[in-house]
Length: 408
Ligand code: GLV
Ligand code: MN
Ligand code: MN
Image 1 (spheres, rainbow, N blue to C red):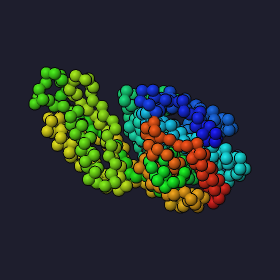
Image 2: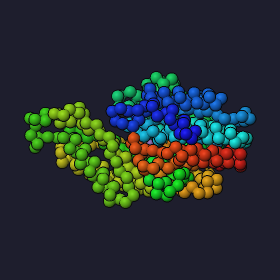
Image 3: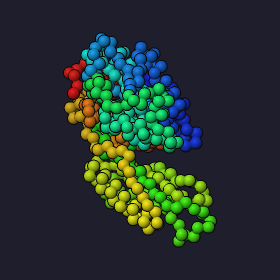
C-alpha cells in the first residue's frame, strides 16, 4: 500500500457517524480532538512538535538549520468535517503534508527556509456557522468579539467550547506575528467535483475559489395544533420555508452559474403534530461574480418576504459569512505549474482556508482527483495511487519553494 494511503488508513475509524453515514467531526468534538491527537503523535514520530496558537491553529516546523521562522513555506489543511462528510475533505491535505515531509527528507532536500505544517480549526463552519473560522481569526477577517459569541446547535458559545479545548478566549484575534511566518501557503485538498475526472489527470493547480456566503433566514409564525387549526387560520413558517427553498432554486436557475443550496432547516419545536412557531433555514449561495451572488440573495430575500407576508409570517435575513471570489497568487501558482507542467488548472466551488489566507499572504492550492466527483458526503473518494501522486506533487512543489528563490 502506498505510504499516503497507509497514513490515511489510520484516520478512517475516527468520527464515523453511524446515524448519518460518513464522518462527523465538528471542531473541538471528541472525534476531531482524537484525530488531532493522532496527528500530533505522527509529528512526534518525525521529531516535530505541534503547538496550538492563540487562534487554535496547530503549527509544526521542520527547520533543520534552526533558521528564523519568518517567511517559511507552509502547507496543511483541516481535520473537522461537515455532518456525515467524506473521509478526505481536510484529512487528505493533512496526511499529504506529513507524507510530503517524509519525501523531502528521503530525497535529502536541504531547505533554505523552514517548512511549516498547519491545521486550521472549524474550516467547515459546521459547528459555529462561519466557515474557515480559524483562518478568519488569524487574518482578522472576523472580529474575536463576533467569533466568541457564535453558538453551536446546542447553544454553546464558541468562547465556552474553545475554553473547554484549552484555549484562552482573550487571546483570539488577528495575529501578525503568525502571518509574518507564512512566506507562502500551499494547501492540498481532495477535489470536490468532477473537474479532474473529466480532465483525466490526478492532480491540478488551483486558479480560484468562487465567491460564497451563508445567510440565515428566520421565519416566525404561530405554533399551533396540527389537528384543530383550520388551514385558513394557520401562520405556518415551515410552509414559507419550503417555498423559500424552491424560490432559491428558481432564482439560481435564472442566474447561470449560480449554486444556491438550503441544506439545513430547523423547525421549532419540531413535533410531528405541531405547526412550527419558527423555522431557521440556511441559504448557501456561490457564483464567480460577487455582484451576482449579492443579486441572487437579494432576490431570494424579496421573495421570502412576500411568501412570509402571504402566510401571516415574518422573515428576517442575516448574513453569517461572505467570502468574495479569490484568485490565487499568480506568480506562486505559475511556479507550481512550472514544477507540475502536466497538471491542469482548475477553479473550485468549495471554500478553503487557503482562500482566506490569500488576502494576506501568497497562496496556492493543489487538488487531488476524486473519482466519484462527490464531496461533503460519504461517496467522496480518492484512490491510493492518486493520494500518493498528490503527496509526490506536493513534495515536488515544496522542494522547489524551500530550495529556490524565496516565494512571494
Ligand atoms: C467547504 O468545504 C465549503 O465549501 O463550504
Ligand atoms: Mn475542506
Ligand atoms: Mn468541506
